Length: 302
Image (cartoon, rainbow, N blue to C red; front, side, top):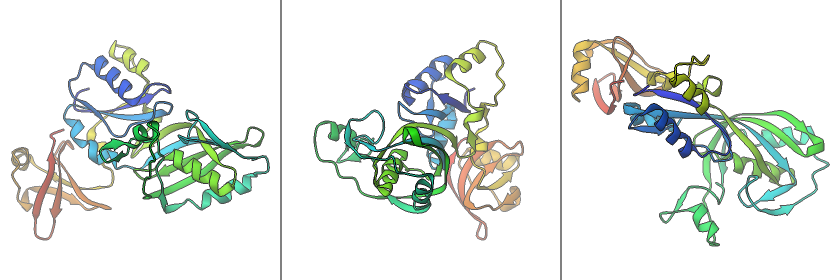
């Protein structure tokens, strides 16, 4: 399982780094990384990269993410989630399903979002959350985000909570989204629970728990396709397939001639993944098709 993408279903209460450390211990691999962490209280899909596949982290981090979140109305906490201290309460018994649907519609598409104060974002080289815990004033700037899907899954009026599915761009904080929905409704709100269900093309339905991974390593089969080829992480990238002679040159960082490209497919993402004839990912590059200028981002040989 070295030089691979592994889909892990992180359990609530375990940090992402504790999860990754346990995966490293079970696999015995030296190099390991991720394509986006989850908070300790959150659960769901953690995309783990091993060996040379760790060089793809920056690309996979930029993928859209999908979450299922539970939002509690009438209460605001300093962290924006259930782990924080309650800083205000408001009556929320009059909120209807139509009110929630109306509020959700205002967050669709490209919007500006202020990240939560208790976050890992840096201010002057220090984490915002560390500064906040020291009692210092923390001011974070609005950031552009894109929410491409936002739907109401359920509304439990008697418990003043509702559940939503969100598909969003990199850098979106679901805690901030819950806070902002509460502001629109005039009741305040915090995020009561969170589960990541997808990251780019990868789904939590195919992920294994740490316990299942350990069982698999000891010879027991699992009915999930949790081991993925790195090339599967780039469905929207343009593709250039090359033969053996070009492959050898690419691995040495040299360019190859247009005639050595077996096929070229231009997709929505202008950056290219370069594959060998066996559909193995060997490089990511910018290619000017007309002038045949090639600039390698990275050579990975996966």
